[in-house]
Image (cartoon, rainbow, N blue to C red):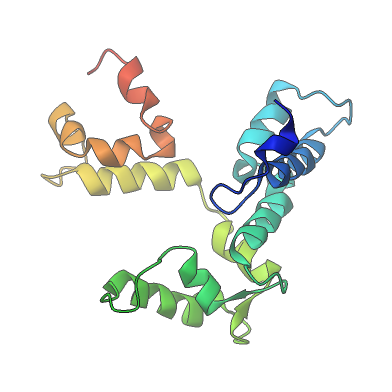
Length: 181
């Protein structure tokens, strides 16, 4: 299929834009510049948030995704709009108000009303943050009904939707591959 036939936007990004983004990410991941990715390079391509040398591309992609007016910074409205698309007459959930507070009190460190690239990096890739550890703790928090800090098969099945949506379980694939279930 000709890539120009797929230029219709899906989720706000055209096929051509996705190709451009992937090409840029590939070039950063291809450390030895041989236009082929080793296992480590391919891992960095797929999971740039886990690689120190790929952090700039993660920040750049986040900025591109959220900065709708393309002014090089993220406003409070763009920040909230990335997470919540409520109707004008709909009651706003409390978590949205909490996110507004997070933006004002913690994310916008220079208090200019916007997030620049440095502030976005501090938000999405905080120093000393372990994504896998945080996701595992989140899953236990969500599913550990008896608060014993251990998950039973029943607890996991009761919160199956949480596990299916998790990167830690490869979006549910790990749940169908193991004999434990």
